[in-house]
Image 1 (tube, rainbow, N blue to C red):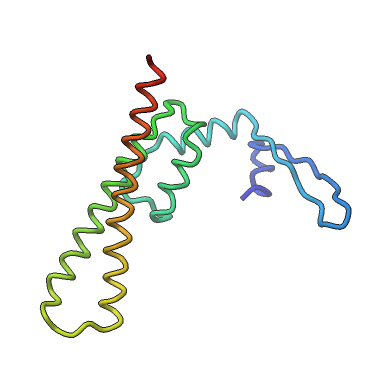
Image 2: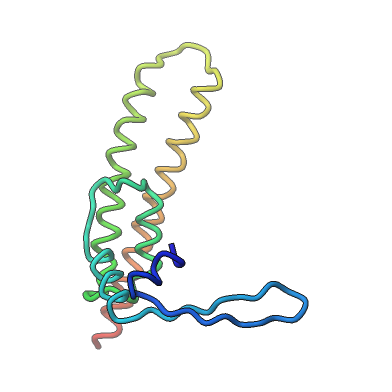
Length: 137
């Protein structure tokens, strides 16, 4: 992505020579690139095409958002996961008492991961809200 971004004038790069290691590049985001990043951060998608990783990535970059409102990103991620949890629980209900095979173990993994992530979202939302209240005082 970064090599393509140079042609779009959204970032600058500077090569740094390193002795005994491959050279590295330092990047600086230009105003047009920052505007593009902020636009992407502020757009709330219920079901991003790139999948669930988009939510964590957006939260990571929330310091660059215009609104700096991570609550929207977390709420969207929560809604996405609630839909997943509902689908997984429907599958689980269809299993009944039959013996568990590998696919059922994978389903259990999905259920546990979604529930754990929902707990993390709730904790993170509460912590961010508390920090925002403290900052306003």
